[in-house]
Length: 411
Image (tube, rainbow, N blue to C red; front, side, top):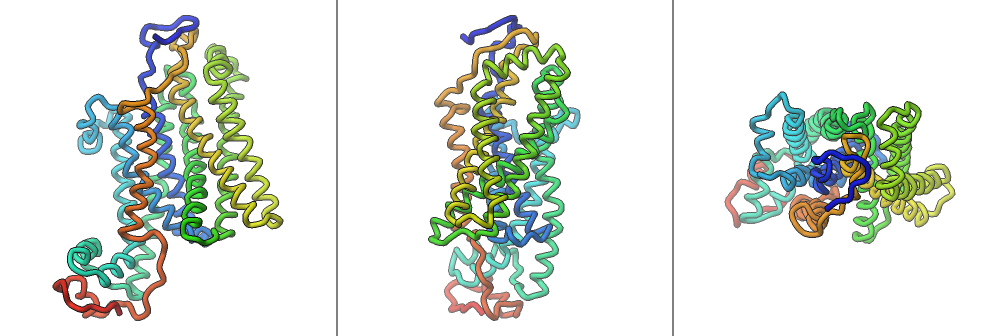
């Protein structure tokens, strides 16, 4: 039985929004943050992000596929979860999830197809049998990789990136809106909540890409592109400054107003959330990476490549810890405080097993990396140089659809 201090209502004893509700904004944050990076290249022409642009898009796609699973696992009837997409009730705030998730998924699938279309065609030309039929189906009957077709692809990618960027931001800002709209809880109901969720999503997405890029580069036996690493560190530092500033401003405003809710919030921060908020979110996950990234950004020209990579990776890992702590403190912390504003519940300890347990949360984080591995095996994340002579010739276009077993040579 949880320990209660002060005065609490009977329905304040339990933590209803469990670890899965913490995982939901954590995973959607990777979706939005990774898409921001790929948009910086495809939409805003920041060529320094070219080495990670395809990795960022594939990462956003992989995490989006599992983004709804934490909610499904939390529902008492997971089979009803799809109803929010097919029959949304527009008077409910949750209807926004179905609309935003479905719309953003459609945009991202289209953009992935246009970006990887030359790769799909190339693999269709080189394959045989069922493998060829698979890639031919993915190519949707279009095998033109000539300059005009690639120009059309480029325009489509730019258009979809322009549509997808606000979609990705809305998908995650909407999570902050859900919490910010709960007026009964002063820890959640602040105007800054959607903005904090959005900028922290950028932090988590960029931090994840920093780590992924370093790991992938090591696995492939090559050194990470240093202008790209410096750019990622610079943008991560920028969004981390915004995140910490907004989170501190939120607390400072509450403390300055000294409303009746501040008495219980201050007790919450100095007792139940002292370790997860002060130590993990603000110091270990906030202040330390802020200093490390400042060294990388301000002393970039003096740093050796190895030092720059190490500092950036360590800072990124700590940023991932900061964002998870922030999600935990918002979701769980808000439920430790009684609606009477006079009592606190004992800290929440998630179960190890079960569909809302720690092992399931680890599996949810691991699942997108498995999807990324499959994605790389099927389409290839690393960009290949175009084959000489590949184009839109009619015989070439008909090759993938031809009967299996014929001797076909690309170009």
